[in-house]
Image (cartoon, rainbow, N blue to C red):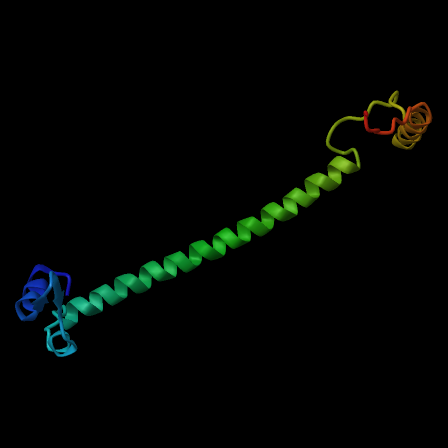
Length: 122
């Protein structure tokens, strides 16, 4: 329909009124639609099937790789939180003592905090 011959056929039968062309359904339904020969259709179908199969395989590969990446991410996070990614310094203070010290510092700073109330100036 959008080929040169298809447009010529439809425009030849179009009715023109007030700068607008109209084409009736009968003209469209009787318009010839060119088809490829059967042997060419078979080749096209086989090529499409092969490409769709390849696309399905790529999709499955991508899904598998994404799943592996998530497992790897979880493994890295687990090792990071358990301290297995970098060598540990035995002179570092344990995390429990560090957290207790931070909490104590926060409590001290909150006790020393001066709270100001917002008031209106007259």
